Each structure stands twice: as C-alpha cells, then as structure tokens.
Amino acid sequence: MRFLKYLIAVWTTLAVYTVSAFFVGPTGSYAYKQLSAEREKQRTNIEALQNLNQELAGTVNSLTYDSDTIMIYARELGYGASNENFVRIVGLGGAKKQRTTAGQITIPRSPGFIPERILWFLAFCAGIGVLVLLSISEFMRERRIRWRNYR
Image (cartoon, rainbow, N blue to C red; front, top):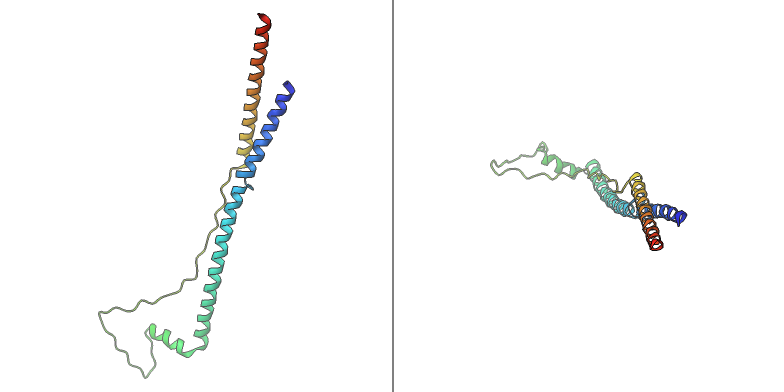
C-alpha cells in the first residue's frame, strides 16, 4: 500500500492538472469559447467597415465625377454659382449636416484563463492532499490492527 499511495497521489496530480487545463487553462474550452465570440465580433466589425468603405467610395466617385453632387455640397458649405442669390433667414438655425464616420475600431479582448503555474500549483496541492489522506488512512488502519493485537 505504501508504493500505491504515492502512485495514486501522482496520478491525482496529473488528473487534476489535465482536467483543469482542458476546461480553464490557456488553451482550454473556456478560452476557446471566448476567442470564438471575439472572432465573430471582429467579423461583424469587418463587414460593417466594408459596407462603410463602399458607401464612402460611392461618395468620392460622385464628388469626383458628378457636377450636381458637387453643387449640393457647395451649397451646404455656403457657396453658390455667380448668377445665384441666397436668402438667409436669421433665427431659424441651420440644418444639421450629417457627417459620416470613418468606422469604429473594435479592440479585441484577451480571453480569461487561469495561468499554467496556478494550475500546476492546484494540482500539486490536490496530490499532496490525497497523499496526506491516504497516509492518515493507512496510519489509522495500522493503529486499529495494533490495538486489536494488543488486546
């Protein structure tokens, strides 16, 4: 039994480390789920940025080649043709000009996990705990046998 308790303690240490690393370790299933969710968020952001890029490219095209669009934007800025007269009504306030944004940066978050050192420490403590329990159990068994033989 003496050799077996050491073997069981080592096996317990390895089993606790393996199971904990599989679930909450740096490459465990919990970290994998977080990274998968982060990947989907990044893909959604990339699609939104691609759509915005297409809209802005269309705006650049229309500003480059369409004279009517250029005239509309010029009037919004307060410019006009030489034969045009402007009437400004004071006190009404101007219409808010809607500006497009260049997109949002989505900063990826690192996944939450328990570092390997802590996993090894916990597994080592579990192995020591099993060794202590088996040693106490063996001591109590030998004590009972000695007590029975003493009577």
